[in-house]
Image (tube, rainbow, N blue to C red):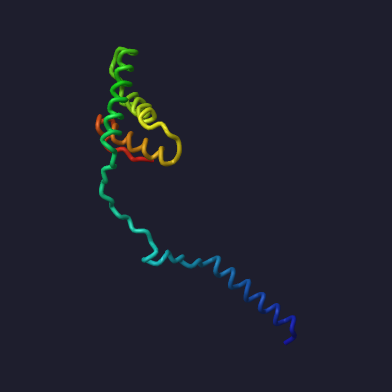
Length: 124
């Protein structure tokens, strides 16, 4: 057998193997068990908000609610209450930045759950 014939045989074998692999794909293995993410049910943790911040948030919310009622002569819908609470959280804690964002989220969570606008607020 010459050198060229052996190369041709090797190429044919390679092509045949590739063709068979395409026809019969192997089942892909998933990660090992220890690397898979486990779903852990987390307890609902009450977010801490200082008493001063709570009272300020409540005061701003009632002020904005009163303003709404005086202006439109009616009680706000839940959607409007949500918007009022977002506005109150911005007034309650003014600074900008990532930390401020999460503090405002805590203020919103406190107000929304206190006034039964939503059952459970997910901070995002």
